[in-house]
Amino acid sequence: MFTSFSTALSALSAQSTAVDVVGNNLANLNTVGFKGSAVSFHDLVSQSLGTGDTQVGSGVGRPSTVRQFVQGSIQATSGSLDAAIQGDGFFVLKDQSNGLVFSRAGNFQVDAAGNLLSNTKQRVQGWTEVNGVVDPNTAVGDIKLPVGSLRPPFPSTQLSVNMNLNAAAVTGTPDAAFSTPIEVVDSLGASHVVTIKFTKSATVAGSWDYDVTVPGADVTGGTVGTPKSIKTGTVTFDANGQLKTPASTAPTVTLPIAGLADGATDLSIDWALYDTNLKPRLTQFSQPSAVSANAQNGSPAAQLLRIGLSDGGKILAQFSNGTQEVVGQVALASIRNPESLIGAGNNNLQVSADTALPAIGAADTGGRGKISGGALEGSTVDIAREFTNLIVFQRGYQANAKVITTVDELSQDTINLKR
Image (cartoon, rainbow, N blue to C red; front, side, top):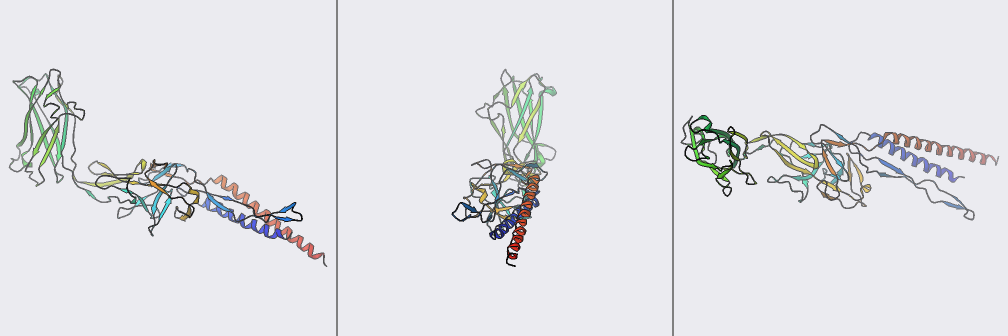
């Protein structure tokens, strides 16, 4: 009978621990990426009375807690650097002591130095763009973003114009001449207007002469207000209106722009008369002369406007010149036995002696889950289930407290037998 005291006391301790776990789960009901814990009870070894036919347990042992890594709900947000993991995996972070910790919370931010951080200031690990390339096959490191940087200009080296020249145009009339301008960029980021003027030949059927000019003020030795010719030539078309010469064996015409007045490096631009499939960009049909598309690959100096995290963990930077570049990528870690991880606070987990070696790589590879940009993973705590558990643990505590008072009364009755 008197062992009932220790048995009931072990139950009180165990039920109290279980209530603490429920309290922690409920406290993190709205914590991003939080994984709720479940309580696991186990009995203590039984003692045998008499011949061993009667066994009485010694109570309940200290309960163990198991973190349950089930998928939380994915909720869309307005945060440009928010990310949620769908499936297995953890974000890899480096704390102030340079130790690796792991988290499912993807509410990231950027500090003044451009480091990508978790909301509790740990450094997010991944890959940063180097020479225009983000290589996930290299070792992970701190993600450094180009905050406040000015992107250098990229001088134009190619241009193209998709257009039709009017086959029905009569020489000497306005329809027999057509021009189109296109802006190019020099090494200093300054823009220059290149004008391509076509004039229908009076002597050769299906032939048009072209003259490519730039403003005279843009080049040394030029005259303000007078175009400066940089290239002349002829294009001819066959009876079906398809470009015949220059032939597809020589698909580009080089346009040299030398002696720029602003001191920029001389430009040498390839004018592409054919697309990548060697289909002519110029045609001659009985339709009004018109441009359907044009393009060039130069860009002026650009200021960073905003940074966002897209699906797959790629970090995109948008610049003032309208370009968008991948400047980084967030890494994910796959851990075979995540239940062995230990809570480290700040939404982070750290490895224990029983944890398998984390496998770090890009999202959606090697069994790792997917990353959704502009979203966060909600807590897995179910408030209804936790309230149910709370009632059960409370009743268990009350029942075992009643055992103690009952045994105390029996003890008093036993003592009174001697009086």
